[in-house]
Length: 172
Image (cartoon, rainbow, N blue to C red; front, side, top):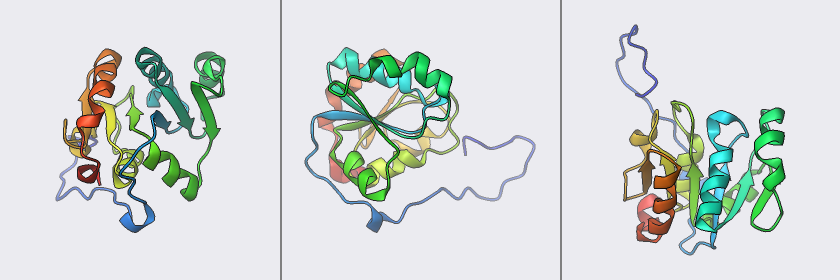
């Protein structure tokens, strides 16, 4: 709905879906945050690092490098393979493990996301999502129930502190 054009007459919105059987529910997470998406300004990888550092949490980052300059300028110098870890692209098995074992997925987007497939994949594993409230995020995330909708990185840091309030079964 967030991506609708005012120049078109819509009958109905059909949201993307996932085959829930392809995603393993993980009731007990490890103690890391996950950035799961392409490395581009739009997706907020830089902001994910800022959030994790402010929370003093480990951040695992997975995805393709879409914008090499952005990656070199804003991401690469922070990767230490201890607190900030880049694992590359994730196949379905690696994706399930990364998404399911994260205590939360950070989705600090800088654009009006038309959907957010990684958001529903995360929730299918039982993992709450902390997202900037832009585009379709309010269609996917029920604030305080399966994640948190925030306005900026400061609010995201506060949401990380509250992520244990989320029932992972509700996310799934």
